[in-house]
Length: 366
Ligand SMILES: Cc1c2[nH]c(c1CCC(=O)O)Cc1[nH]c(c(CCC(=O)O)c1C)Cc1[nH]c(c(CCC(=O)O)c1C)Cc1[nH]c(c(C)c1CCC(=O)O)C2
Image (cartoon, rainbow, N blue to C red; front, top):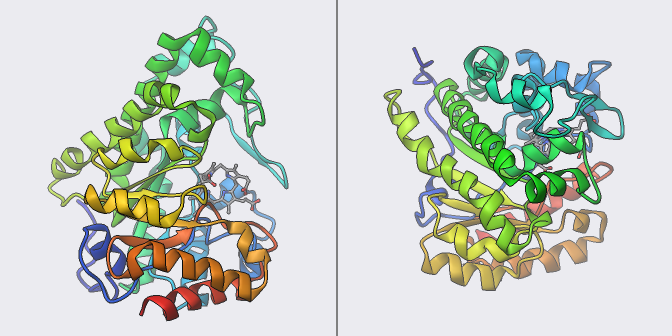
């Protein structure tokens, strides 16, 4: 049985209405990685716990999710569940550890399609319900703690980005391993991309069942692909998710939720993504707001983004100028735009400078 949240009617549905294309009173806003290291309360709550231990602990994960909602009450219009895109590779049987100040690390990344490990990963029956049960529990608990204040976003990593991590073994500068995979072993790569895409559909449907009201697919490494290769190794799998998730949610007797895709760096893919079944397209700061908005409006798509997170290290005058350009470019903020940054907020940003960013968006779109 899906949990019921009827006790807590939604007090703020701005982002859900915007994602459906409706006219709204002002632009909704949130930022990627809003529950993160720039917040002193994040370090306090996390304490000595390992990053993935926090993800696996619904009490801690829900508390971390709520931190920006409490701090920026009245300014932030959505929560995003505290978790990580790499829980899918973990569910597929791969070990992933988070190395302090360095990021994720796979001690045994996939080597070649001839290895036992690839065969095991491909043949393994992954039970995303059972193995990621802690995520659904965290989502349900967070919905209860939110008590209708703002909607909760669920997410997953895109197949291309997850494949990159699984073969690179962590973050990368040159992407040598994953380029070797897609250009030397394209069929084995595609088989794995398809398997990941199917797991993503199931995982997102279960997040919705647990209480997620909107979902986002993060293709953080999309920009490492050429336009031609993006069409071959990323887009079909992003589309597989958007094409199949609504029916999967309906099969559970639930209403489909708005879907966002964020293909970072793949500025050339905006026209193709405007033809997809995603409702909202996330933009990084390589896009000019006005140009992107014109295209998205003509295709009935909503945009999300897109200031360079680095702007938050700058002066308030600089922040204001960027917000003014966004608000003007994205049509004034009354339709078709969810304000965000162009990527996750980075460590060492002063929380009050993010507050100023929100306040400026609020001021200029109200
Ligand atoms: C690529 C990626 C990952 N994880 C994620 C992505 C896609 C978004 C993006 O492109 O930034 C997604 C993610 N990771 C995290 C969230 C939480 C929700 C939120 O947005 O507030 C989300 C949506 C928490 C996190 N995920 C991570 C932290 C920091 C962990 C810590 O050191 O305490 C947080 C708060 C760790 C993480 N996780 C990952 C990396 C590369 C790192 C280390 C580097 C970094 O922090 O930027 C993989």
